[in-house]
Amino acid sequence: MIAGAGSDGIELGTGDAELSFGSLSYSLPVSGFHPSGGPGAWTYASAPGLPVLAGTFTKLPDGSVTMSVTGSGLNLSSSSPIPVWIRIGDDFGSFQATL
Image (cartoon, helix red, strand yellow):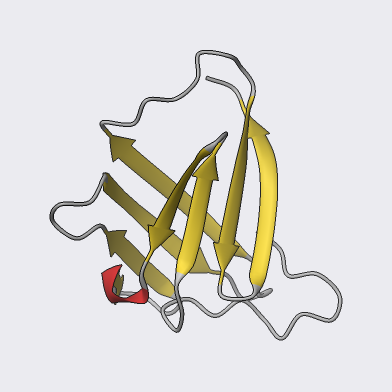
């Protein structure tokens, strides 16, 4: 994810995030984000009772963010590709993922 022109920067661990797979949307509360070792590295784990989501988010020196998210118990559409949308604070991005 790369911050666009006019962005105040992507700040991990300071606000809620949201992740959507097609028509399924999941809130990622800031309480699930925890610093993880190196500078700019964060992990996310959902709270008990919520859909099981886990991920790693790393802010790179150029201000962009790489992320890897896994989940279980998700019932995704069988059509492919599927739109994926992510919001971190006031920054957002989207792409098409092949299932």
